Length: 256
Length: 255
Image (cartoon, rainbow over the protein chains, first blue to last red):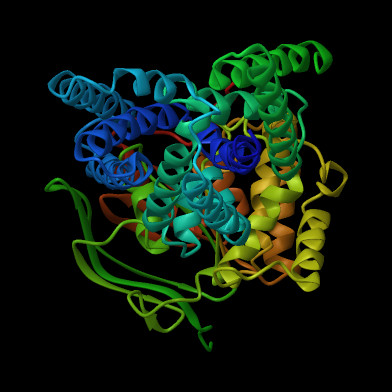
């Protein structure tokens, strides 16, 4: 339980930080796509009997690279690339899972999140990677902001926009992969997006919106984990429901 | 008369999109202190030309020299301030304040991981001041009118303390009353702040009244010189085809 909380706090901070940049780039679906890729990674991990977190991170980082390359080639629309990877990786996951019957019980926890399955090893990996993602966003804040706001102007100012975009997507891949233990494949997208759009309702600048979204996310994660613990609910569902309540309240409160 | 230092120099520059030629064999020089208007029909290559100068597109042929350096060696991106054709684009919901947007103008002068210094912030505040948007400092850009937002992007460009300011169709979406003030503002930047200005427009009237020199572009250079000498029926026919007359036309897109 304590491990779940510690992991939850790490994820609660990192998910909206990355989510913010995805949302303002009209790239919200990226989180969901990477989550499905991570799921295929988990399936591979379970099949090969290696820690699923590692295979999930590996596969989603590779996929992130593939997504950006395909998008840059301009042969396919950005959102079609996401659809391609989302359903493609789900297909891979389903095939692996049906080939290797026997870990179905475990599967539910990866789909919807679970607080009882976080091991000490998982926790260390989650926290270490969360810190890396966090520091990247802090130190590259001005570059990430500028390329999200206007990639063309950013390029005209000499920023390596393609490199920054690729890094952004890779950070998203890591953030998603470390989150699926607690929040689950199907709901991590929601944790990255809902606190951000809640925060955006207040009509504040980028930095304040970003901080607000982290606050909403953290409160959602902590409340959700408590609810999950005391009422024996799937943690991902509980967290996202709290986040949804925040969104609805924000809509009402911030209505001008 | 001694010529001023050449800031931007194009020699025999050509550019094609998928082997469709857009710019053919273009040669001209922009010198320090100039106020140049670029006119030409849609699809005549105006925006492409700007993107080539900015390094966003690479010419198929020809040599570009920026501040005395070949474009490949030109690293001082902050010396060219760019105001894109922005008003029509959908950044209305982007959660950023005027200050946050104008501040991006400093990024070209900073390295990776480098933080904004006190001096950066002072320059940003000053750029907002002279652009007349200081009171909107903490307003979301989405809540501004077209004309105000245009000034935000000019302040952003000025924040990099450029030597050249390039504007692409700056008055599209700005109402006529605001356009006059806007042109006065550009003129004062050129006159009082010694800023070299290049501005693209389809508004021949504005260009002929406001700028010191005009460049007419329709795939290649149709004319280059003083507005008064150039903007006659003969040139306009060559630029836009027959039956062109000097008429002011403003496209005021409602937002």
